[in-house]
Length: 236
Image 1 (cartoon, helix red, strand yellow):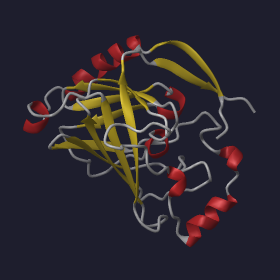
Image 2 (cartoon, helix red, strand yellow):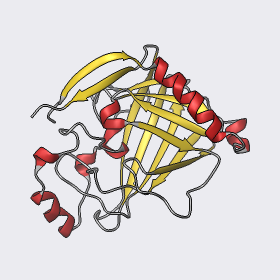
Image 3 (cartoon, one colour):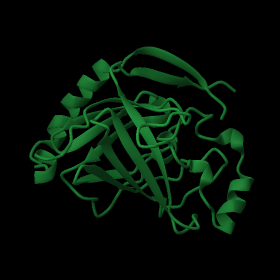
């Protein structure tokens, strides 16, 4: 994968505090589900994806990748026709959570707020900020965006995030695979090994482009360092 020029300018603490102030009024008046309010694990913290070379206790390793999806014939032809120089990654544009979760070295922060969980990517240019709503379902009409509309619920100790409503500006992988307006992502996130790690499973469903739903897994380690603003600077 070609790596755009990066610039680490300052920590994201100020950004995080601003987001909390912004998001709290937006969530005011919403009540979280009983599970989210009582028995749900605390996801708050900063996490970084582990290397594919690492094996965690129990034989847990990263498995699969966006490159391994199976495309329908028409989608495969479309991918082959794409100009790979226009990959959103190379253009310093958001690449969507299906790809972002698997990026080596990816660092994220979860900030639980009343009625939602704010998710920050250190790589702001490619990841942006996500608002995962825990106190509402999808609206009847969803405005299509880079990261879609994300709603979540707790199933035992796993946060299940359901996302739909993507625009057509992200790719499914660096090989030019496109998605349709039917793209639907399900993320299953759960703390493991006494909260020292997150197991992060991502499933993509798109009956218009994918032969079948595809799931891959990444493990994220909880870390104590701050996230930075990792800004991509496009260079031709």
